[in-house]
Image 1: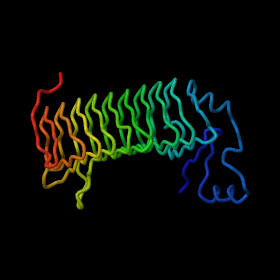
Image 2: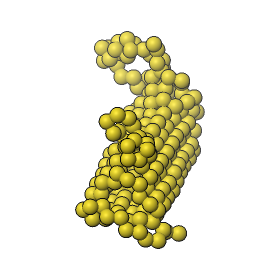
Image 3: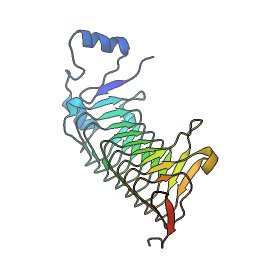
Length: 236
């Protein structure tokens, strides 16, 4: 099966044997430079170091869309159909796989089969998989978000994870709007306890080191060693 492999200097189609042949000859895939091709295909997009940007698109370069004013850092990898909005920064070393990114974002880490809204920030050690992230969400530090939906204006604290696999199947986590999770929060979704989806209500605060296995109501604060739930007023 022939797949499409590109560096952003020139469109090339090659299979595994062709790639090995180039490698054995000591050639690099970006030896053939076509700057006019780049400027035409990605008009008004800034590539900090386009020699190091790699794209794997079985459907061809038409399946890569990057909005005007966006900046692509060095060593960025695109796998599969990818859409990026306008004025978005893709940080160095980021890997994007079959995902959609909104406008005015600052994106790092590994994004897989995800839909990310505008004005979202993720860090270089964040992984987002099969998830939907709404606008104005931050998840900057050592986070794993799998099979998760996150509402607007939510802050995901450092080392927060959504534990989506219960040993049998993958389960979903739904996090509301204006939610804050503390450092080292673990949101554990199981088919038995959550009927397939753990839900964190709007305006809830999850304290540091909390292990959440049951739904958290809107406006709740989860604190203490025993994860005591306290209720407060929801943010307007």
